[in-house]
Image (cartoon, rainbow, N blue to C red):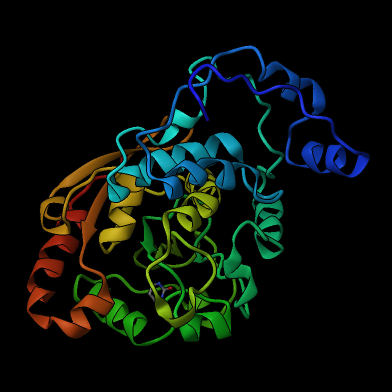
Length: 304
Ligand code: URA
């Protein structure tokens, strides 16, 4: 787009209008986009220039403001200085896409999510499992693996077994209900007060690393999960989870070994410890000592 070019109000057919309304926009709002001068994006690579509109408008489940926030979180990973520069500085007030606030609604929304192409290859949406009321631990991995995709539950394969062993080493057990695929209550032993989920809810085929667009599309679910659960502490398993949650462009070596304060979407500060992903430990068991020390650090966080 040339500098100074204004977006004019598009002419829309009824199907397009219905679709835009579904994602929270309407003709009136689009017309307002003609007013402010958009910021030029010439310096951005084309894939990046496409990233924000795709994430925002892809399909109904994407919450545009949250997706932009998520993209700015993953921007450092892509070497982006200003991922949001495709949005005018005087961005129109866009009403948030109606993503349910309640837990059941959110879960159902996720189950039918078509926000990115990962829905094409999934057997199940792996929303998460465990204690749903202020769990002591919210464990956030990267993305479901093959066994998780089959069962619909996170951390079911070998990385899950290792995670279970690592938690057991500090006296924490996964909720029995998680293992049975049911939700758990706070009555579950406090040392089993764990909720497990991932940044990405659908399995990337071949277990490839999720793309920035996939992360941005899925992040609104995780943000709402965090806000709803209000965990005492978050354990980010692996580089991708740590970077996506903290929005810091740093190596896992730099991010682990300390307690971060993560800003939740609703403005709460939640202590977060990052550590190696169990799949990494399967390849590099020498990092187990780091994980043990990170887990003990997380355990030492007192309930605020
Ligand atoms: N299984 C998950 O649920 N998450 C991971 O990050 C790895 C395996």
